[in-house]
Image (cartoon, rainbow, N blue to C red; front, top):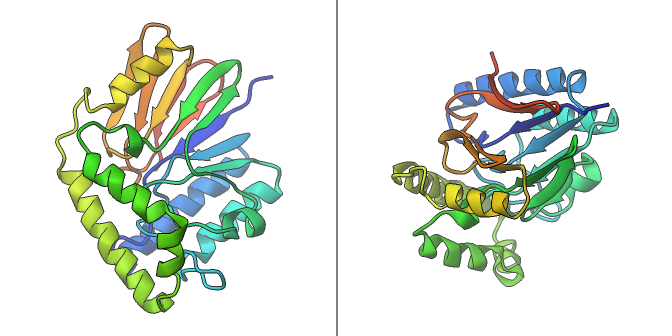
Length: 241
């Protein structure tokens, strides 16, 4: 029997005003509640948060409804795969130990309904972005994260928020095209046996057939609430009302 798998990407929770964030979170929680009875697995393809820095004993406030809805999914037996994006990369164990999610710091390679999926946020494969890739290695290093964790959480989260907004503006200003590096990478992966390559990051929706496979970019829930659905026949990108 085929499984139904949902995919979402680039919500950037915490980016906008309190009113807009409340509306966005409420919409997303309704989607998660819908997922409880309509899918078998959920994949979050990065940048669930606009910034996330998890201290050892402190987590950011304001997302309890999202946390509760995610925990209800996993406690109900629905696996939730969370690929860390370029904005929400500083995680410790909260999402795994408290909420039951499966965290991936790089690519998720998984077979769904007999089809081979390569799923990644995509930031590592964007062309002409060497500066960002160097910065990412620094920010992901244990030494840098350990030093940053010594900063008081109020200041640390403020700095993370400010840096994240700059990064998002930079990403939004880039002139991505079909040959942004992601499609080229997708073609390479399909040539090597993958049926579906799923990315986020660029905030541009793509659904391109190539040989026997497909390149999918989920766009950004931040700008238009969309989710991917794969139930064994075809991958769909669906607008969430």
